[in-house]
Amino acid sequence: MLFTSWLLFFIFALAAFRLTRLIVYDKITAFLRRPFIDELEITEPDGSVSTFTKVKGKGLRKWIGELLSCYWCTGVWVSAFLLVLYKWIPIVAEPLLALLAIAGAAAIIETVTGYFMGE
Image 1 (cartoon, rainbow, N blue to C red):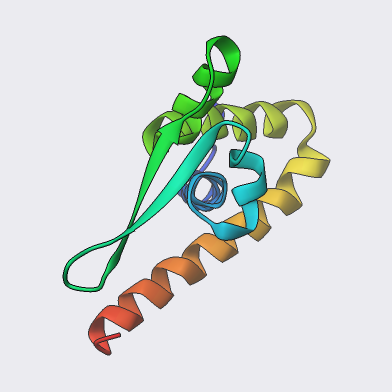
Image 2: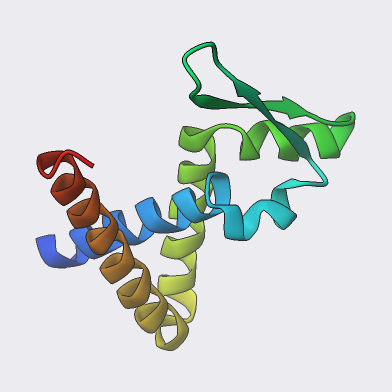
């Protein structure tokens, strides 16, 4: 059994959440997505800005673009990557999992706090 405790499961869940969000949505990783998808920003009549993605290319490039435009799809691959890394190279995986889990928990806390404060 890979997960020896519920704590380890939650660490993986938070880490996978954070890494997936980092890859799919965060501006800091836009340079990784740029060869595979176009992100189009459209100003709505109410003034809000909506972002739409358009997959580029054919073959492998299109497949990667489809993957990067799908949060759930990327999440499966990120989870698999983290599990394999933990199994094969735990000395590298453990600090990475801790970092991502802490960042994931902080993101959730910030979102909840912002909601209740009306931000």
